[in-house]
Length: 340
Ligand code: UDP
Ligand code: GLC
Ligand code: MN
Figure 1 (cartoon, rainbow, N blue to C red):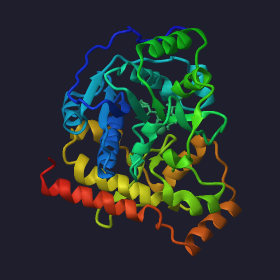
Figure 2 (figure 1 turned 120 degrees about the horizontal axis):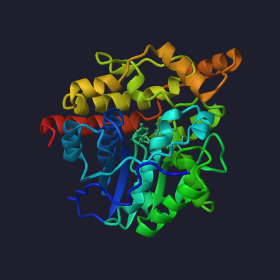
Figure 3 (figure 1 turned 90 degrees about the vertical axis):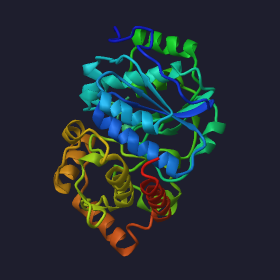
């Protein structure tokens, strides 16, 4: 298989920070860049002491790039790497994920001694800096196939040598899912597992609700995995809430936090036309239907009602209440200091 876009060279590199450790994310377009801005603010609101670095590709607009430079310590532009593997990507029903091979560029960030990669569709709700004490490759079980790790979050050590080996494997063995997660799981079979709270998938209906009620409040990093992203929901700015459908109430506190940051700190500055195109508004019902279709999930009427009843009996939004207070305090400080 040939890998599209691998030149072996970074097309440009700008380094302004000096910290040896960093959180790294990726955006190949303005939509994901908006998600990355929310993620960066959430990491800062949780008091991280690490650098924030983003890998972008030339499709991110110049206006968006300047905005990213105000929030991230480093903005690194690379060429797109695309697996072009439509057959495997079709199995995942996510044809758009070939470009996630671009993630592999993160191993070239050798100015850092250790990094934590985070997908741009993640949100920090508590400080997760303890991840930096773990070895390469540390990650969380994938919810679809728990013997694999989910590549939305992983601890890694930048190394040109590892990068070259990963590229070689991409060109020879290929990826079993057509995206980065397949290749990374093949390359790091003996990965180190940490708790689900470091990559808590918040876009699924949990089949184990009691565990979510017991442990969900410990979440540190929340991942909006799947084709429906926070920016696809409708947000009511007067009530500060996102409408979620039945069975998805557990998402509300995290979506509300995401939107609070987006509305107050990101949206006023983003280049309107580019991001509004990417931030598609759907009704909650459409959103849920799409999420179910895409994830291939069948939610039977009984379990849906049962789930809903549980949430109605309990406190649907108690999770994340403290973390929201941190986020709100951070937003207030930012607004008072005029974004500085
Ligand atoms: N990504 C990107 N552009 C794309 C698709 C993905 O920049 O067109 C990046 C982004 O950082 C994103 C990550 O790759 O969070 C993985 O994709 P996504 O989160 O959509 O996959 P999921 O977690 O839903 O499987
Ligand atoms: C998974 C991961 C995502 C990765 C994709 C492609 O769904 O959540 O981070 O990019 O697979 O392999
Ligand atoms: Mn993701």
